[in-house]
Length: 380
Image 1 (cartoon, rainbow, N blue to C red):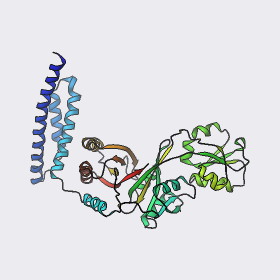
Image 2: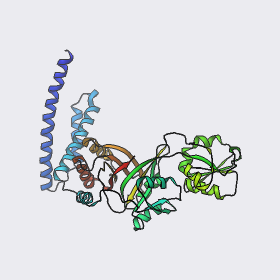
Image 3: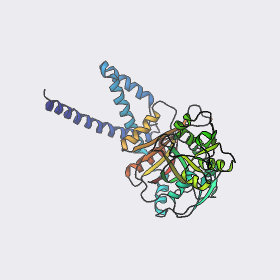
Image 4: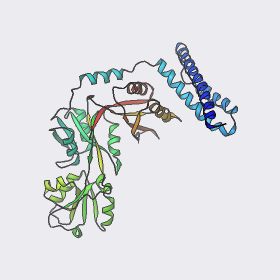
């Protein structure tokens, strides 16, 4: 047979498969309604196991794994469709609708914004990129930023969440478990670390370098070449620069920004010393109140799935079925729960799409634990 004839056979088989699939899904919906009327759970694990075993007995050995994968997927689709048939509309969707209607068209120009660090910190630079004239309130720690927003002291907080070189900032994700907040905007800031020292200091004079632990990781290549130099972590890169300026020593240096060099009267001994030239840090803006601004095309959620085989796969299959791209998936261990994790998803999905509404409704009503963290625009 030539390729045309073989493709015609495939097309004929696909036509039969489609009709069988549509009939199967229609029957699945009827079963869902019957189960609902008779108070029978949607999931019947025992029947699914028996069904798989029966199918495998009828399948040639070389195709058993393929048949198992196909029918596990069919079971998931049928289960999802049954849940959708019976599912009420999540109250969360009404909350999101109200937020869209009542949020102003633009972020306020000069609100109180909590930032970790002092004048010159990269968080300050990100904050000024996000807001026209922010009233910045500096905090001593990242947790203090969450607390300032949670208590109402500041309307917004700006936090670094990941770096293109060093990866996710795990402490931020861990703090997310302890505070209720929403993401209202994000941005990416190009980070150039420079080796700063007091005027007159030479490279060969340096015996101690101060910086934030993330900057230290991002500049690992340079630091490996500097033998017998002590590396000391600070709360952030601006504090490192201030510490060098105030030290009264001529054998210290800081990994910090050029902005801090001018701010604290330091010389730049080496420019852009990070390992990668395209070194970006992503920052998020958080608020206590849900605010959804026009153009929001990214969404963040966090959830916990049941501690059973295939639970995460079933969640991921929903994203795939709806054509929603996952930009980032982060997992963090849940304190006091053995081998259970909080999962954080950053998604590409316009908030106005039907796919977004269907996904939020499904996750809110089917996950063991689910929290919508907001939809927002990323400022370039």
